[in-house]
Amino acid sequence: MAWNRKHLLDIESLDADELNTVLDTARAFKAVGTRAIKKVPALRGKTVINLFVEPSTRTRISFELAEQRLSADVINFTAEASSLKKGETLKDTARNLEALNADFIVIRHSASGAPHFLSRFLNASVVNAGDGAHEHPTQALLDAFTIREKKGRIAGLNVTILGDILYSRVARSNIWALTKLGANVTLCGPSTLVPKVFEKMGCRVTYSVEEAIKDADIINLLRIQHERQRQTMFPSLNEYTSLFGLTRARMDRTKPDALIMHPGPINRGVEIDSEIADCKRSVILEQVTNGLAVRMAVLFLINGGKPQEVAA
Ligand code: CP
Image 1 (tube, rainbow, N blue to C red):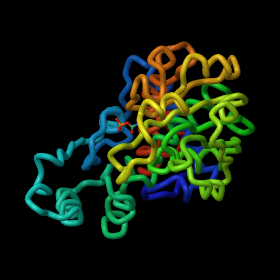
Image 2 (cartoon, rainbow, N blue to C red; image 1 turned 135 degrees about the horizontal axis):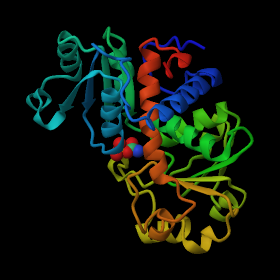
Image 3 (spheres, rainbow, N blue to C red; image 1 turned 45 degrees about the horizontal axis):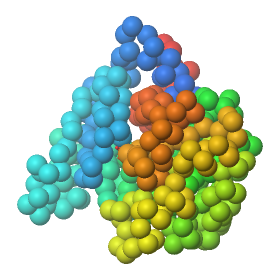
């Protein structure tokens, strides 16, 4: 199936067929990653600029590696050393990057909607690498890929997302992706961080961590997004950990094959006990590995590639 999208701005606007096309293409790219020669010529002659205006480790580096594996020319924009510091606007910055013949702009920004804004006036393809508390589409795609790879399916699985939902772009993108793919999504955390309004997105909200984890096939933990909270949302980190942290005692009350996920960065001893983060049922580092194949797939498909052409 062709993927007729110029940009990847969000998961909300994608349908299940489009999501599955990305996942299938990513599976093919993951196989390419096991070959002696891991590079393919799909983006040869194309210029990709990684416009990260907010910190990142996993997303920035895996996008850069994905672009290199696709043979693109890659430029990494460093916000701190750029003319943004001299008052240049995001719009002018992006238009100047396009004047240098950028074909793709991969943007991370603290403002929700920044990628949509760029897509309205740029000819380049825009890929959202995380915008404020809005969406983080490639994170949701790599999470869905990991679930499908480990469990063989997504439809019918019980997925619990536990933590700071309100300020999490990962949560929003995961909710869109997983509900479209047929999972039963439960949200849990302090009531100040998990408003009931999220039920309108097709998921269940509970404030009982015991209830949220007991039948879960997947437990996806989120850190507290202090950088986006303008007020105190709960009394203390210690209280958060005691009420909602995934401790050994709570882990013992989960299904024996429940998987533990986290988009990172993890805060050991806050939302997750250190030993749980490193245990056999944790797939946190496999998520990072899968991010490379997923980001290759996204760039390949936006560039007009066909899934069946990956192996060639
Ligand atoms: N998961 C994620 O987006 O991590 P980074 O902020 O390190 O990119």
